[in-house]
Amino acid sequence: MALKPEDPSGGFQHGKVVDFINKKMARHVKGLEFYIENTSLSWVEVEDKLKAILEDSAMPSKAKEACAWGSLALGVRFARRQGQLNACRVQWLHDFAKLHKSAARALVSDLKKLTAQQEMERKEAAYKLQLTQAKLEKVQKERDLLRCKLFQVRLPHVIPAPSPCLAFVYGPRPQNRSHPAHFSPGTAVSPGAGADRRGARPGHCQWDWDRKSR
Image 1: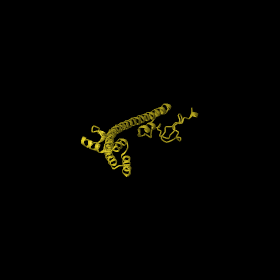
Image 2: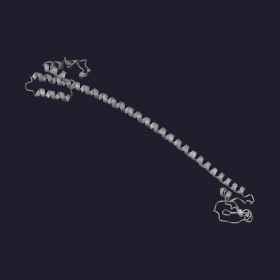
Image 3: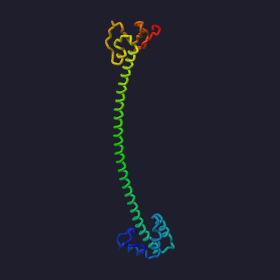
Image 4: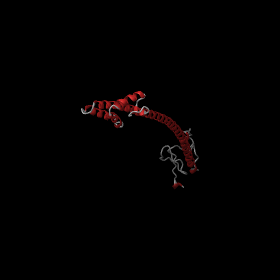
């Protein structure tokens, strides 16, 4: 018996159908041989072999009919196998699509976390920059104040008026031009020689020490 009712790979579900096809193939020995020998081939190869048998004039008609029934059984078998392969492919594609969807969701979540982290780092960097700028401005003001105090210490014999350096740091103040020790930016004073105006760079406190007068 070529076909077995309990064999699911045969493609047939009913025992009566299997028995009928087996009887048709058994009418000639070529029918059973044709079925058994060609189970591992493709349908194209089976059809080519059947065509050669049908075109063979020396082949008996019963053998041709038995081979035709054998090719029918093989066609059902191949269809069953192809259906199983297609089902496996569909399942694989379904699993792959689920995996791709899960990976896409994970990427979106990671992207949101990365964006939030970058935004937080940007705000933190901006805040630190503001603090640094404020500290820098404070240090610059303290530097200018210390520079003006240093100028005053180096000129103990001059009665200081409102210092132009302080005006440079804190803004201009009203000046009393009647004060004998008044000086303005760009004026150089020599100790012991009175207020001797000499060229100086505007906006700077410069004092020219007259060493010859000492």
